[in-house]
Length: 175
Image (tube, rainbow, N blue to C red; front, side):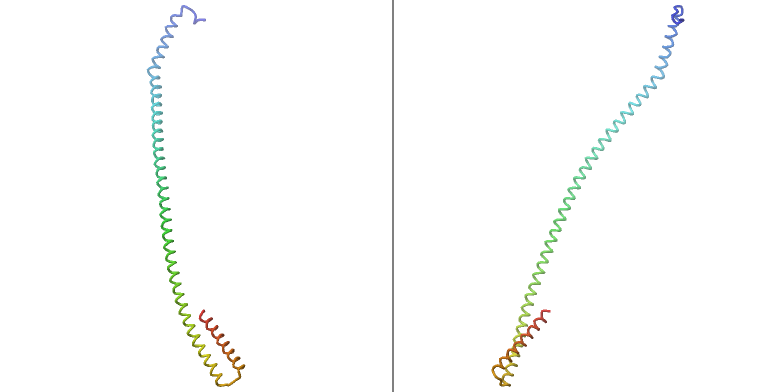
C-alpha cells in the first residue's frame, strides 16, 4: 500500500497537518463564530422567552388575585344588596300590615256604629209598627164585641202579621 511507504511518509504527514491546520483555521474563523452566534442568539431568545413567560405568569397571578378580590367584593356587595332588599321588603310589609290593621279597625268601628244605628232604627220601627198594630187590634176589639175565643184568635192573627212584617223588614234592611 502506498500510504505506508516510508519514502512518502513525511510528505504525507506534512500535507495532512497542513490540511488539518487550514481546515482548523477555516472552521475557527468562519464556521465556529457563525455557530456560536447562532447558539448565543438562541440562548438569548430562550432566556427572553422564559423571562417573558415568567412575567406573564406573574401578571396572570396578579390578575387572578385582583379578580379574586373583585369576586369577593362583588359577593359582599350582593349580600349587602340582599340584606338591604330584605330590610326594605320587611319594612314595607310591616307598614302595609299596620295600614291594613288600621283600615280593618276603622271598618269595624263603622260597622259597629252602623249596627247600632240600624238597631235603633229597627227598634224604633218595631215600636212604631207594634203600637200601630196594637192600636188596630184594640180598635177592632172595641168595635166588635166578640167573644173571648174570637178575640184571642184575632190577636194571634194580628201578632202573626206583625211578626211576618217584621221579618220582611229585617230581610230588606240586611240587603
